[in-house]
Image (cartoon, rainbow, N blue to C red; front, side):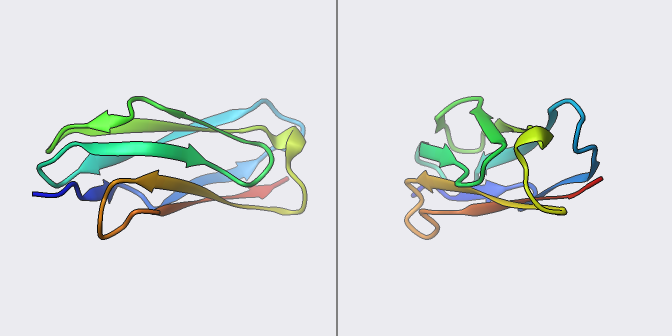
Amino acid sequence: KAPVIGIENECVDFGQVNRKGEPLTREFVIKNQGKDVLEIYRVYSPNEGIELDVEKTKIKGGRSANVKVTVNPLQLKGELLNATIKMVVNDPINPQPIVRVVGELK
């Protein structure tokens, strides 16, 4: 009966990112595969240049929500984009799921 988080893609691939280009946006889907309401308490990235926008913070059983990931290449350092998105949810089995954000800076 408990909420169960399901993440469509546990890796968001931005491919080749132009270092001097405009911010790029991708999405991934969070599903509630349980019956009780899945509550998303926090979605964040400890990495610079990553912005997140969650469609909704309460997902009923069997429903889903989109999370927009925006990468600002001007704030990124290094040759590779290798960031993490961390979440805090009320899933008793997986309370802190992680999604990777990857890409190659050109």
